[in-house]
Amino acid sequence: EAQVTQNPRYLITVTGKKLTVTCSQNMNHEYMSWYRQDPGLGLRQIYYSMNVEVTDKGDVPEGYKVSRKEKRNFPLILESPSPNQTSLYFCASSVQGLNTEAFFGQGTRLTVV
Amino acid sequence: GENVEQHPSTLSVQEGDSAVIKCTYSDSASNYFPWYKQELGKGPQLIIDIRSNVGEKKDQRIAVTLNKTAKHFSLHITETQPEDSAVYFCAASSGGFKTIFGAGTRLFVKA
Image 1 (cartoon, rainbow over the protein chains, first blue to last red):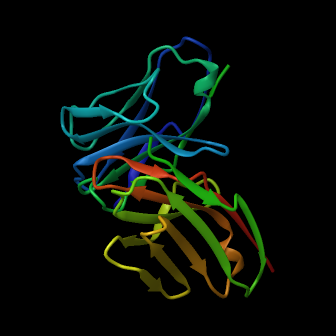
Image 2: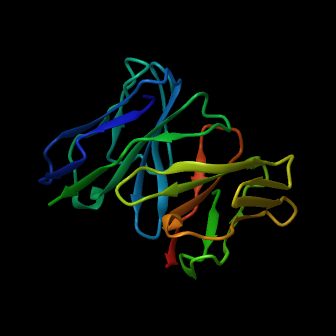
């Protein structure tokens, strides 16, 4: 089954404790992206990757890092989480990124206390 | 910067009625307009999309219209059913690697 898999689904952590949210897709998509979803703000892009070893900032990249060492994986790293990063996070992938359907993961609900 | 405004934020309709969600975009270079449906506890899923060379597209009970001059596009759901209850997002892309999403519309369909 074609899918985007995120882990964990739920995470509660403390301020400053480094964490990684994993994302994996099995559709051989070149393009992957991370979004955060906050009430009243919709989906805002954090980082995206056009292919292996090629990443770029989205609209809200501060406090986040990403890497793309393999085509199927695109982890999101929070080196020093803060309470304002409490949010619902989605990973997405698509064939090209240019005007094509995005396939989203199930989401990761992160709480930073 | 680029912006997509979506209205209304909440919409409640009676089963069988129609629902309309409207979006306005700011980047005149936008040429791809997808609509996503997000059910509770799930990620958004594409339900219909339209490209700038088309004014209207229909798929069963769902239709999307695009007015490039006014920079408006709308989602129309006819004969609504309880399973249509969800959050709907519009989005706009200009062919680059960024897609700008609207803030979302929570649709309630009352049985």
